[in-house]
Amino acid sequence: MKRAVILTTLALASLLLSACNTVAGVGKGIKSAGKAMEKSAQ
Image (cartoon, rainbow, N blue to C red):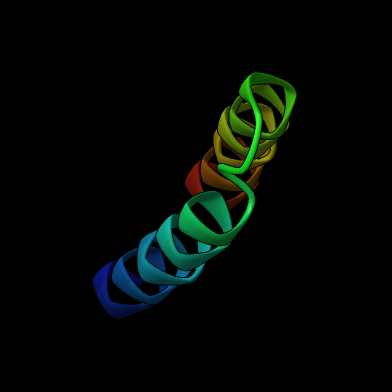
């Protein structure tokens, strides 16, 4: 379980970094990261 959370976090971090071209991209990235963390916590 802990490994899945770490892998999910790393994947989302890479998506965030690639989507950070604009402020809107950062907002979308943070939103998707939050949703993914919420799913993995359940």
